[in-house]
Image (tube, rainbow, N blue to C red; front, side, top):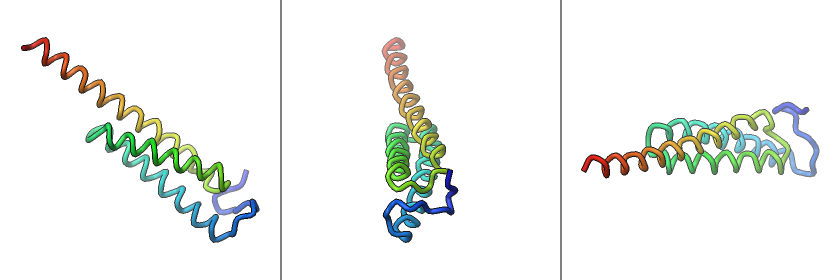
Length: 103
């Protein structure tokens, strides 16, 4: 299994692969951070962005073959993003139901 520093020969230029590796790292870490923040603030929007960012990183990992050690970060970003979305939807639903039962 190649490490992050090793660039496999898949027909891509080394500078393209290095740039993609940086992009994968950035997308995975931003997705994770946004997903965590989404658990507390604006979960539907930030959770969706975390899922998108994690998916984008995973697609680049599979296409370019670099940045494989950030695959777990991208998957975690997707998972936390989905949790943030579900939590905020559940909060809205229970808030509406509670408001209906009070009034």
